[in-house]
Structures are given as structure tokens and as C-alpha cells.
Image (cartoon, rainbow, N blue to C red):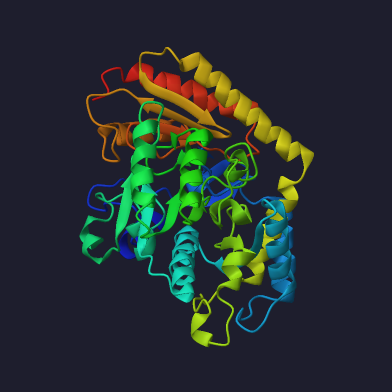
Length: 427
């Protein structure tokens, strides 16, 4: 049997309805922004393999550092032991964040990063003897697929079978120019109840909701209200971190401080599974006690894996290079220019960009939901033209590796225009 046949016999794929989904791509090689299948066909990885691959595939510096680490130390328990790369990445991340951050807790992926944050918030209040039990999130949120992360996410088709197991969460409307006054009024009402333990949000861009971009000033106003009522704030930067929004971290565009930040995806350059939940000295100190039960009794078998930590350190090395920052700036500027070109285009309901993220909502008779028929049409079209994109319903988005060349970016732009021209009657 070939690779595709063996896959279909043994593999259960994520976010896939196997009954009707096309056969998965048999990818056997990757380099830079290009993926190659077993027959030699190439595909431009325009969404950075689920928004993870920052520098392109098989970057030589990351490969070298992983190989070096593998030859020295593959893995060691992180409870009661430590190692050089674990300390290095924690130190470098804490120092790169705003100066009120102090401690980094390791886990394995974006869902666990937010799960840890949620547990930190609830146990913070428990350790203080203060009965705060409620979380607040923003409508359309996606924070992962573990139960805590699902609880603070949008209550929709993704997690409907599990809703009876979720904890209590209130939702604020998504903040826009027309809704912000309503959002602030509702925030004041909910936050002032004295019951709210934490407020979690995706800063500036809601990813899975369709790359919905919103104003930093709106978030600052919400954070100011939360701070007024002593609510722990959690920035889920699993997708937005590491220059995706133009800054190293999206929270750098805020005036108000947050208490916890969640990082994953691009943390290792997208090469290894790893996450960090980073918080303040105040939060950390609330877990210090002679009572073991007041510790954060949470962990994963591969917490602080040395190979993943080496990849993360290598990724930071690349991010610190002037040429990388220039490429990020160039991609951001070209996205803005493309949005300006499309602002009056009749095929689009909205065109927005934020740093290296480009979000284009295509008009149609259907709602812009994950199940829009446009999604499959667009996926097939781009794949036939050597581009791997996974649209979010009616939203075509581009979030490429930073090593993408200008002509490769122009190739994506060109095919977006060709696609909407060829599919004028999209629905």
C-alpha cells in the first residue's frame, strides 16, 4: 500500500470529517516555505502549517541546535531537575516580555498553555481564600480543545457535545467600532459583580473565529475595567506571539498590563511541541506555602523537554536577526498595500491586516461560518495552484513563514484575485 492508503487505514486526522474529506496530502519533504509530496508536487505553505512555522521548514540553525541537544541530553524529568536550555528559554522569554513578568511554566501545546493559565487563576483565588468562580471571555473565542480551554471558548459546533461539562463563563460581544459602548457597559456589569476570577482574550486577533482583528484601544478599556475590580487577566498569544501582529508580542501594543500570557505555536519556530504560561511574581508568590497542596500541582511527561527548549532558543536567535525583522516588516507592509488595493473590491465583505496576518472575508449568501461551502472550493482551488491554504469559512487568510520571498507572496495575492474572479457566484 502507498502512503495515502496506509494513512486511511490507520490514522484519525484532526478537524476532519473522514466520511467526506479529500485524501490527505502525502507530504514527504519540506524546505523553506515549500512542502513536497511523494510524487514531487510542491505546495507553498501559506498558513505556516497551522500558524506555527515562523522561519520556514527545516531551518538550518534550528536543525543544528536540535541535533546538538539530542546528542547531549534528550529528556529529563522537570520536577526536581533542570537543564541549561530550559533555564535559557525561560530567562530569555521573561526578559523579552514587559518587565512585570517573572516566571515561566512549561507545558506542551496551546491548549495546555491556556489550561495552565486557567488553573493558575482559580487556584490563586483558592489559595487566598476568596470565592471567585467565574471566567469572562469574548464571543467567538478559541483557546484550545482541552476541557478548561473549551469552557472559555465559543459555545458552538466544535464543542457542543461537551457543554454539560463546562464551567461557568460569561461572554462579552466582540468589540468593534459600533459595539464598543455596549461591550464596555456589559463588562462593567459583569466585572463589578465580585464573582469574576479571570478574563481571557486573544489580543488584537481572534484566530479560529475567522482572523477577526480588533483595536488595541478597545482591549485597553476592557483591561482597565478588569483591573479596577481586581480580576486576573490572561492574554492567549498562542497564535499572535512572535511578531505575528508586528510586535514580538501583541500585548506590547497595549497600555494596560496583563497578568498571564500563554505562548506556543511559533515558540519553537513551529518545529517541536512546547508551550509556556508566563506570569508575575505576585501570582507565583501566591502559591508559596509550607502546605504542598497550595503548590501548582500540574505537569506533563515532556514538560521542559530539552530538545524542544533548544528549538525555542534557536528560533529566538533567528528572530533577533535584523534581516528577520526586516522580512516581518516587509510582509506587513505588503499586506497593507494589498488591503488598500482591495478596499473597494466588490467580492470582499472586509479586508484587514495585522502584521503578517492577512484576513479577507469573501461575500456570499451563506454566513461566514466554518461550514461555508466556500471553504472547500477555495481549498481545492489554491491546492491546484500549488498553494496550501485552509480558509476559515468565508475567510481566506494568509499567515506565511517569515522567509517567504516577495514573488511568492505576490503569487498568493494573484491567486486570491483569480479565485474570487472565477467564483463570482460563490454560494
